[in-house]
Amino acid sequence: MKIVNIHTGSDNESHIEIRDEIGTGDARMSSELEDAASIKFVHRPVGKSGYHNPPTRQYVLYLTARVEIGLGDGTSVVMNPGDVLRAEDVTGHGHTSNVMQGGICAFVSIPDGAL
Image (cartoon, rainbow, N blue to C red; front, side, top):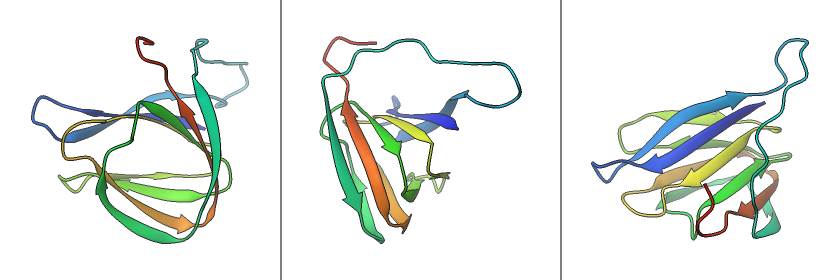
């Protein structure tokens, strides 16, 4: 399971960084406890969307969907079932989404003021 962060840089473009990998090796691992405001489950059909920004800072939990996230510089990352995206690029150019395998995602809103 990978946790990926996407945020807007000073160049007004979205940037990706791998934050954590949990569940690798034998040791029990967990992330820090974080606040959440709401959760919504969505079926994502196969297809592409152009550049967009999330409506609010949010986590996207890829439960059964497989989605490629693309940036303006050509960088991309494939989110597989079990992976988590922290989408914080609410301003700027945004990112694209290419749903390669349709399925369910959970969108978890991050409350204002939360880290």
